[in-house]
Length: 370
Image 1: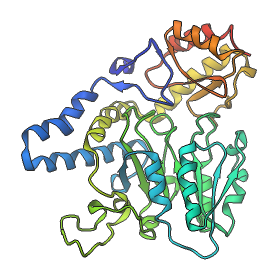
Image 2 (image 1 turned 90 degrees about the horizontal axis):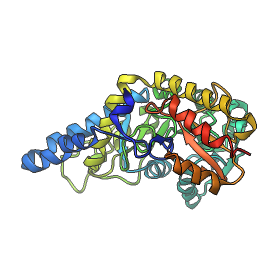
Image 3 (image 1 turned 180 degrees about the vertical axis):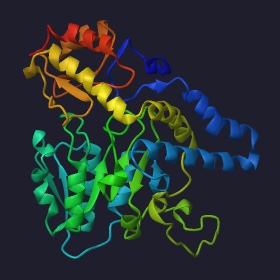
């Protein structure tokens, strides 16, 4: 069973939206892809380390419908967003960046630095309306430089219509950036098909890879029009040329690499790629949705602050309770790992959860729901 391939720190683990569970093979991947070559290979350590980077890129690519050459490792999502923001070409009259009130704050913090270059941030209202492509109409005006959409909004669990947003943006000459941090590994992501210009994601959540192994994806055409500021020797078309007076951008996403990647996090993240790929993200998504259906059937509909609409939701749920502190005590006693937003209980489903987990959650919360 997939459950047996992960360390689950509580009997019922519902925290994949925050920190995905660690694969039991994580330590062996760290050793094989990072530590063992460092101990034994001397100068030749670079070869296995580069192979680890390539393995990480290929693993991510296979799970998000992309080509490995279009993936660039980043330490976190914020770094990816900043790299993209400061790489965009100056275009007359395109002075607005459109995002939403429901985006994760780190994305907004990073984009707000665009005000230094004269950009104005426009925030669309959040909620279920974000599942409607027409709600995104302000993002496709002639004065918009960049539209940012989150595939799965972390609090509402609403799925954005990513493909349609990207299509409309492309038709109007607007750059598009997708944040797939809350989708990758648990919901289908099809970057090659959606036609985005850029995407960012992390291994921390449903990709179950831990910290330090985030990534940036760039469409080759979009990348060719952009010039990142935070470059390093691996952003160079010829990184081993070693001429300090000459720099030439590498093709595609590679130009966003910067300096030497942190190998250990990438090695560890590869452990979950094997598990998730073997199961298949489409199958994981269907499985998670069935568990959510069981949760939604077991508690009153009005208890849910997040969307319950089938086909328009990610893998998480926000459950309103009368008094969170009291509910949290009972959840802790039952060894149910969760967190909170808006005074509600926040949970999420993943491939290592099962019906017994959901029934335990319902059993505790049925006496606490508002």
